[in-house]
Image 1 (cartoon, rainbow, N blue to C red):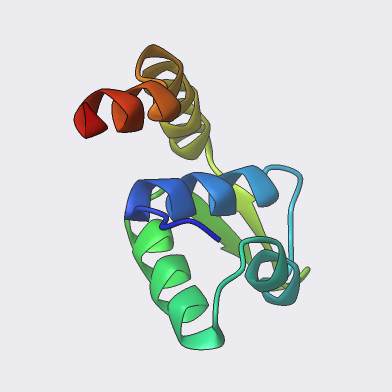
Image 2 (cartoon, rainbow, N blue to C red):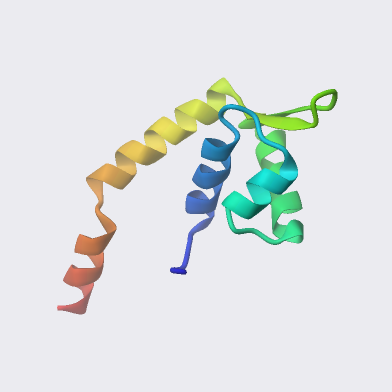
Length: 90
């Protein structure tokens, strides 16, 4: 697997949790260890990008999280990674 930035991981977590997801689902689909998962969930919840439903034991992407995802995807489209790598090698 290629190196992923914090933004890449954050984006993956928010996408996985859009319809609601338990910790295990997020951990396996985002390819994270349990300590990494705990750290990301805490930070994203504190920042208001995720919310946790204790009754359902699910994490959901908030409206703020959806806005982040939209902006992240727009920036990712503007700066294709393959072009960046090719240009830096020349």
